Amino acid sequence: MTSTRARLLSLATAVPPHVLRQTDVAEMASTLFSERYGEFDRLSRVFATTGIHKRHSVQPIDWYMQARGWPERTAAYLRGAEDLFAEAATKALDEAELLARDVDAVVTVSSTGIATPSLEARVLQRLGLRHDVMRVPVFGLGCGGGVSGLAVASRLAESRPGSNVLFVTVELCTLAFRLDKLTKASIVATALFGDGAAACILRAGGDAGVVEVEATGDHTWPDTLDIMGWDVEEAGFGVIFARAIPPFAEANVGPAVLGLLERWQLGPEQVDRFICHAGGTKVITALERSLAIGQGALDHERAVLSQFGNMSAPTVLFVLDRARKAGLPPRSVLTAMGPGFTASCASLRSPS
Image 1 (cartoon, rainbow, N blue to C red):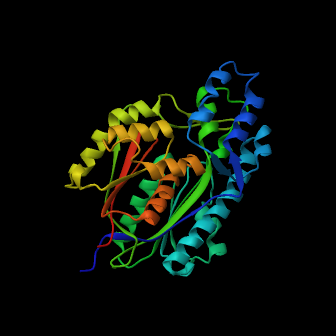
Image 2: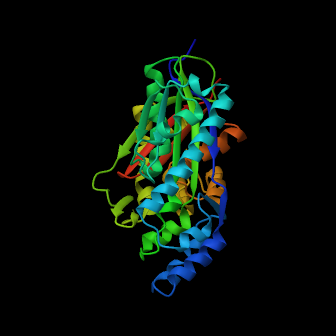
Image 3: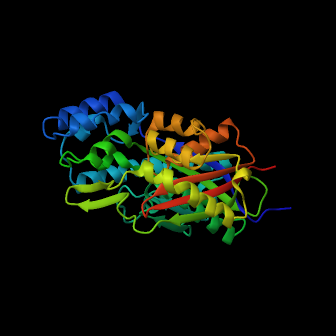
């Protein structure tokens, strides 16, 4: 029987060319902050405890050692994001054995830069997308955007069975680095964030595909706007980490996910693998405890974090890609947390 649910026909990732080794970033941060920020020596331990070995950036490390304003950050965002969008989308199309003109709709998720016209419009001719392609740009989802965007794309595919929906998420978190921002949140962000992109093709009404999107849902907690987000300031975005995320995740994510599973008429015993956004070592450990899955269970998450850092929205799709190459079990639940504060989830079924 042909399924009416959306299926992933392909999944691809892309990173920019510049490699930021954690030891080099720690040395740079020490040079820039240690004499100006009295708390830096204490906070600098975060560079060694993140679990990150290297990350990727759209700019070489020297670029970040000078003060930058909105025009320079935006120019770098547009150049880097367009290139990563095109690379990830092309890889996803190739894997699905489709041409750009076969795409009926594009969902674009990005929260680390401002682009109007939006990114998919900027690469439309470069990729060869049709002039009547539906465009759905989404801003503000942050780290949760990989799962939330996938949910939007899957529902769009299901509303038009047989159509091909391209979902692309691009985040250039490193461009938010600020020389003038002497805060704990800014130092932590300097130690965590990298750049990357991911793309996939979804279609409903067929039997082909990597996995089927079985169900999707979100849980937003009240009075949590201060946990994660951006302040829009004169020199650029300013990262918001007003409350520690790991203890909040440990206390709250498990019950929220159980509530979503119940809504989907599933029990936790029916989930073979959780695939989580790799936000940081402490967050990964907190999720293992909250989801009661055992320490070390989120091994793909730790591997992605080590090699790419926290790339915001694309990160969970990097984890999904690694998991599928290792062999997905019958049912996986994709999870990510983002500004709101929101947990976004998707249940994925492997073809039988």
